[in-house]
Image 1 (cartoon, rainbow, N blue to C red):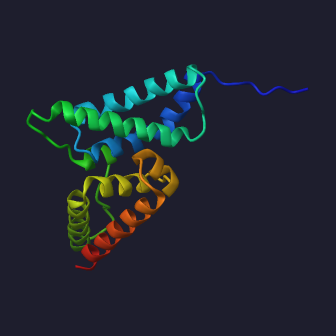
Image 2 (image 1 turned 30 degrees about the vertical axis):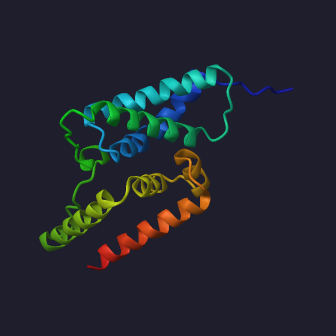
Image 3 (image 1 turned 135 degrees about the vertical axis):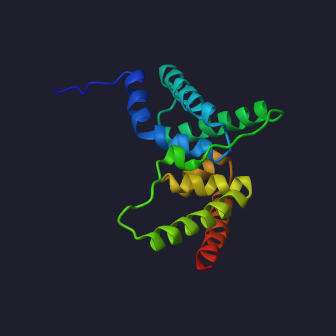
Length: 173
């Protein structure tokens, strides 16, 4: 009889780290966390994950669990920095956006203007709506977003519909 080899909590967390590190970095940036603190928040998230797994706690929806921990740690960091001068890192530094060199200069300008309009809309969204959009962009389902943010499924749906309508209006300009 073949027995499946079980992975250790550290190996399981390392596997998740490889797949979730960049999405969690991007998500923490949506809170306006300093770039220097973002990496630390993600590392703390995965240390908490190792402790969670080692203690034998539930393993279902670990992606959502990691985003919730990152969410809470980001809010905690913002609260700690509240009195200090706030310097927000450019999302492009972390996301790795770059212009497409295949585009001509006019197309590059139009693309940059569109990106700036959509980023302005994202920054202007209320925090809860911005979090919903960011989590959805990272591939979380509505139910997972509701769990991460402690919202009802209907509230997530309404938030995303409202936000997408704002993006559509800005994209028509």
